[in-house]
Length: 71
Image (cartoon, rainbow, N blue to C red):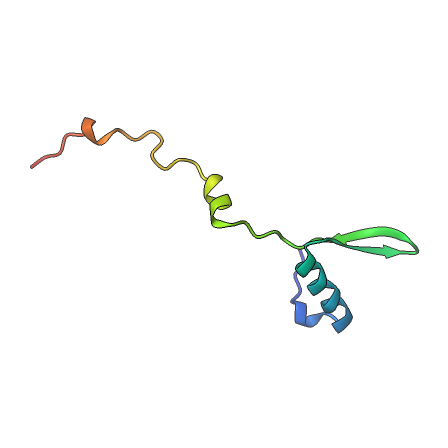
């Protein structure tokens, strides 16, 4: 995928993208009245949302009571 920095875009496009980011609403680009691209801001997940998608770290581990420790 090609990437470009926001500062490399014309000022008008920067303004529209900043507006889309602030409102959270996608920006639809049309040609001759026909939509051909949508630019949508990436939703940032909260820490709680991110943690809720992680697999449990203790899955498959033995309980500490079942482990023999050498002295």
